[in-house]
Image 1 (cartoon, rainbow, N blue to C red):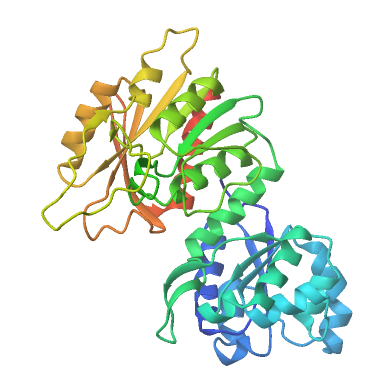
Image 2: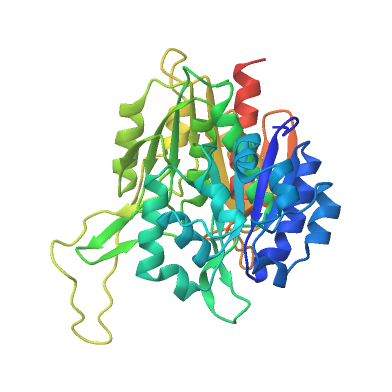
Length: 404
């Protein structure tokens, strides 16, 4: 989606991630949007107003009590002229200001004076992110209707590892385009789409199970992109780490049998997207109580049986019951295209999204995905992109399919 004609008010707060805001300005403009930067005093310790001004083509604003600027523009007019206010990076201190309604500089005063929607990209040390005070502030802001993108998990500038890294500029732009898609026309309005997500658990005994490393992030991203385009989404999810998408019917399941049952109950649907990493096998007879180790040589033998093949079964339904579009995923560790092509033919689905989950790919649990989309005639390499961007790209494909 283009940002042509959209005016973004970008508030840059203090933190090492502020340097990424310059790339964010460039990417917004590349999509056709315009950017008016505001820098807090702390932000100017990391990036200069001159850099932000040069890239945006608008004078970067820093001072609340600038008589010339206040007379010409004014913080009230700033807050009203934007189509969206983006805070990136948003420091813990600035989130606290927003939650408390403080207005002691140009950035916070503009936020308090606005009735424009706000998108926030937090960035801070993992300990600050997990602090109870920060979490209280986040809950307050969410209740106030503030939108969030990120933070990501990874290594910090301070050397620690965990959640708190600012979302990459491309992901923030994707969130911006998703916001405008959700508030504009709804090209998938009236369409019912099933999305499966996350792993399944196949129990061995009451305390042990067979599962996989799927985080559910890609499924969540797909569901959110579809909701933004007006679709009614039945989101059938195993026990995933990712946050549940907003605006969906959430159907929590655990095993492959559970997921099969809920998918069939959710039909009919216009489309079904099978993103979940469903276990191929389950234990034939799970133990009723915890299996005990009697001695080191005593290793229980597990008899496995096949689980239902949900993708193949839905693909094979009669036309009156089958979704018009069935989309599968193929997580492969080697021979990606060969295995994916064979799976497309074997499953009978319309589209297949193949992704590399080999060691070192960081697909499971990560924030990026390298996808190759296949149908019976074509292959399209999407390259490596964020899971959020992949979700929007797939949603755009569905939009084009249903609105030729």
